[in-house]
Length: 50
Image (cartoon, rainbow, N blue to C red):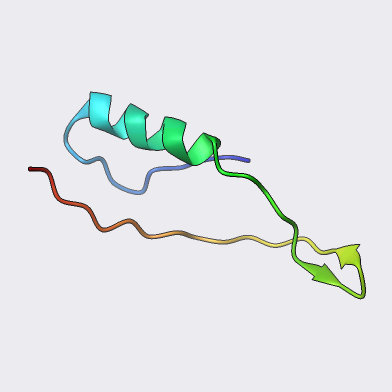
């Protein structure tokens, strides 16, 4: 899995923390008739710092 940030949060440490969390996600392939299919997807995060 590759992770590409389209825009920085402005905090390199926070960017790295988000990337590490994404790398812990478990992958489950999209399947058709039981066969894994290639797919490309984008996930958008909306965040706020407190």
